[in-house]
Length: 259
Image (cartoon, rainbow, N blue to C red):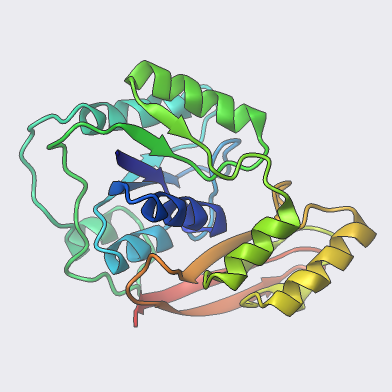
């Protein structure tokens, strides 16, 4: 099975990549949607550039797809970008991404991009796309419809997984999950930049029950990034500044590189 991963740099796509690897599948590439507008109903917005470093760490080719985030056009643009990849077009292109290309694409400046970051090329047919969707019927339906038009299988290995179990398994199996934004009552500034431990998951379980939010952040209560995982060959080191407004906060990751 030759598959692509829709990779946001966060915990759920990290799990999806690991899941595909455990099955012995050929992970032919990671595809990252870079939202150039203010928001998206479908895709994660912050820290998605980390997916490129994750891909480089695992020697997996990478394809960033810039999309404004408009609900009416974002799936059409993603499908267009995947069309040639999925069907194995023989279009010739360079094998790696250059630093100039990545800087011109407005990814964070101050990041150190490795020279071996491979470009996802179109040389063999793709069989399936693996997505880390949890419970969003809207997201799952739109991706399945796109996959049907492309003639590939859609896999959502996390679909309706128990939130506590999912978070616990991520930490237990070595996914280094860091909280990059917080937008819910019950989670304060101290969570920003925290690398989750099993003890933190127990605290989150208590807080999610008390303040009635999703322990896995599925409702947008928080966002994550993954700095190391069992499918990665080296970890990611970051430097960041914390911003807190009194009710919500986020990390500005201004430097990142493979360790």
